[in-house]
Amino acid sequence: MKRNLLMGDQTLFRDPDIFEIDHVPEQFNFRDTQLSELAYAIRPAMAGGRPFNSVLRGLPGTGKTTSVRVLFSEIEQTTKRVLPVYINCKNDRTRVSIFGSIFNRIFGHYPPTTGIAFRKVYNEIGNYLSDSRTVAVVCLDDVNYLMYENRLNDILYVLLRLYEEFPGARLGVIAAVSNMEIDLMTKVDSAVWSVFRPVDIYFPAYGYEEVREILSRRVRCGLYPGAMSGEVLDLITQRTVTAGDLRVGLTIIKESVANAEKAARKEVLAEDVSTSVSAKDIRLRDAIGGLSPEEKKFLAVLAEVVRDSEELPTSGALYEVLNKRLSTGPANFYKRLNKLESMEIISLTPLQGRGQTREISLRYEVEEVLKVL
Ligand SMILES: Nc1ncnc2c1ncn2[C@@H]1O[C@H](COP(=O)(O)OP(=O)(O)O)[C@@H](O)[C@H]1O
Ligand SMILES: [Mg+2]
Image (cartoon, rainbow, N blue to C red; front, side):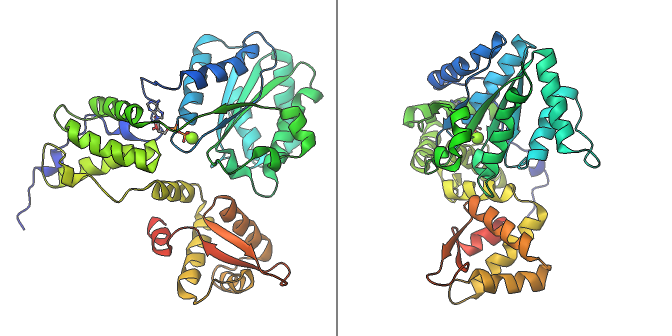
């Protein structure tokens, strides 16, 4: 095949970053209600008071994270009295790392990782908030990642207790959750809930016109003029609405442009529009992206065992293999298993009359999981 040596230079992207999921768009429309509800919850903090806690609920890709980011950057530009702290629970999942992030926002560096007790970090944060009268607003984004080993309960408990222990310290929590089946209230002890008592802010999925306009704006900023026709955008909008997740649309655009570039075209055609991106794929990539290297290895072995077994493997059988192949001990085995369940990558079904034994199944196609890994 004749190689086109110039092809590497040819691009339809004016700015590929515009299509990254974590890009904060310049224009953020259709979320005015949610933004003002959130602002209302935070407002007492602007006057040095205690903000209301809130829970942001909505399917993935409905603008929860972006709303928080938009509001946080507005706070940063307006006042020093309120300290917004954004925590992605996919990356920060323990008390130590969450309070480490809060510490970092306050003092500009992380606490030393060894030789310092959690209590000391906690006290320093509490004393600072109390003495400086700065109000912290902590966003626990994708809080479902904390819903194993009772961590959510524990973390909310320590966060919300801060103002009991340090007179004058004020802190509010914004928890965002993308899984509509999860009822936070049932995951949190009633004693903690009675202090948490969040305002509920709901993010409905975007409709066709909304998706069309959001994507069209992105295309105008991110691609060169003429790179994508209205018809192709309609097609992508349709797929996005069907998938119910704006991230699907952004990913389809990226992939379709790459396809057009590969074919050395200056315009994306309908045939370039990738058909393989589904909301489920994005969720899987998302979930796997939140695993540590050890957890990924664990999942890879688990997936292979599922693929090679005739029946669904039991936890006992899987333990044997993991212990042999990765020298995983029992404590780590159950910890990882529970984590994969909480991230909705696997399901664990108890077997009747078999005590602790559970049957393990993947919630995605084995091949898909191995491919993403
Ligand atoms: N109203 C909107 N206008 C423009 N872009 C949006 C809007 N809502 C969501 N997005 C984009 O969609 C993607 C997913 O949004 P995000 O805030 O991460 O959703 P969630 O946190 O609910 O999963 C991001 O790239 C974001 O920029
Ligand atoms: Mg989000």
